[in-house]
Length: 312
Ligand SMILES: [Zn+2]
Image (cartoon, rainbow, N blue to C red; front, side, top):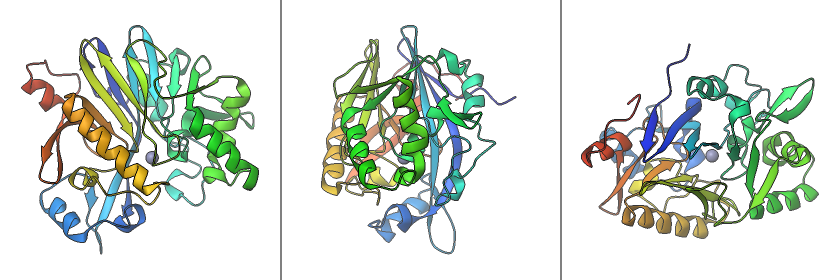
């Protein structure tokens, strides 16, 4: 049996990290072509999580979704890499069979049929994989009773790209095996910033990493959490908020969005969830030099006199 995933209390809501891949290692330049080698060296020497030593410095990225239980509703934000997906260009995601995602969801006390809403911050292959599962050779929704919320701008962008791309080649194949089956099942709901699937949760515009990228804002009893998605991949971007990944499709917009949202969560004293942080995924930010320091969520809540959450 898998250990119970960490659950954070946010007012009356519960927030649980659902891990699909604990850690995958990449050359720094494969993810952050503009990373300053001195910054990497400094953060590594400070013991900041998310780095690995190799012949050259490497970064570790984790792939996880977030389960939010609020007001009797069950939401799953981002569905990672999935099983049985053909991703030859990404060996770590290719034809996986033993991923822990659904087991971690079960350990958190939730079956796929109990998920009311699946929200994909964007449609990259590592955020939609568990949207579908393979059943008798067909891709079917993994969460049979859920409405799947996609950003309309995001979906229309990839729909247009699909007119030009080889079928199956778009998004490493994820458009065909993890997005279209949801559209065809009638379970997709295309939404705009400001939309709210249920009380306490709404979508925030976070464009730049992808055309319709969205962050998810959760609030209960005055406590706030901003699930930033891929506005942030790694803690290095807290030290240097200008730093984009090579996957950010509009670099200037991605920087502007990051600056705006980081400024906002500090002003609002909100918790954040980064897109691919290893170690503690949720925390608070404190302004620090040119960027921000990350204080893990439980330490931050304890400092405010809020009792310790489960599993920390
Ligand atoms: Zn991602």
